[in-house]
Amino acid sequence: MGVVASAPAKVILFGEHFVVYGEPAIVLAIDKRAYATVENREDKRLYIRSTNLNLAGYFDNGTFKIEQGDVKEAKSKFEPVKLAINKVAEKYGESVGLNVEIYSTVPVAAGLGSSAAVAAAVAAAVGELLNVKMAKEDILRVAFEAEKTVHGTPSGIDPAIATFGGTLFFQTDTGFKPLEVHMDMPLIIGNTGIERSTRLQVEKVRNLREKHPRIVDHIMWAAREIVLRAIDALKENDLETLGELMNINHALLYGVGVSDESLEWLISAARKEGALGAKLTGAGGGGCMIALTKDERLEQVLGAIQRAGGRGFVARKTNEGVKIEQR
Ligand code: MEV
Image (tube, rainbow, N blue to C red):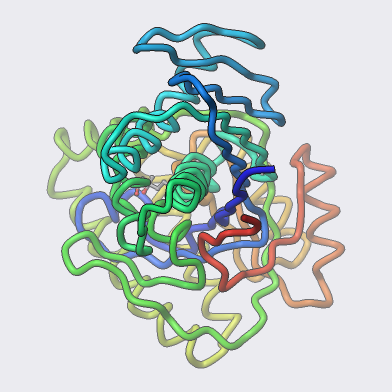
């Protein structure tokens, strides 16, 4: 058994998309994790297996050979993993051969930060195996580089939360700071099951902004006010206000074109069943929505999301960022 590391998935409570343009966002780590197990090999090959995606293959001197699953899918999923490993190996000083096994409980391409969680877990596990000193900031840097190969121009919010966990106030120019959230926030996640590309959703917003800069900028400024108001509501344990703010935030995301029919079904089902607020989370265009409810409505809202066709589950926030599980 080699080294095992893990990192959490996330939900963006407020501010996705607008965060790419320098506006603030609030993100929290949830109790679903990606795990990476790594061990040395005698040769210089890099074997990667994803048990939940049923993909396996290896990189040998720059060429990729598939062993299980679709070659295109495997390459696109494994390239960022390889990049993360190479970045750590650079610090180590020479190229290495490794067996890497990835197991993730995070739905893929659903807006929950699965690729960033995988990259952070892999970077931490490889650093530990090779005895390369990796501070959390180093893991963040590596995971961010990996994320750029997946998403084009990401804000860095996903690798930041996967690395540090907790609840973060995040802004691209000022970085992030932890928010102390003491209340229990009963959140339900509804997965539409529709996989989508974050890169395409971000491009969609960019195109709209180029076409209607003054309108989209006003939408972004409204999103900023939502985040600032939400910080107070979090401090005051004010669930009702948080719910309202989620609904307004969703309307803004709808306005810039990143909701879709599958999300709207789940969101309106949750609201009808008494959710205090509901919105898409992450990049949209499918993927996941979140609903905030009072504890006593949890079961009903979850049931409504499931009846509307979503894969629903209750998410709990976690303070645990990336960590070594076993060495
Ligand atoms: C993706 O989880 C969130 C987006 O805002 C993109 C990003 O911030 O990199 C859509």
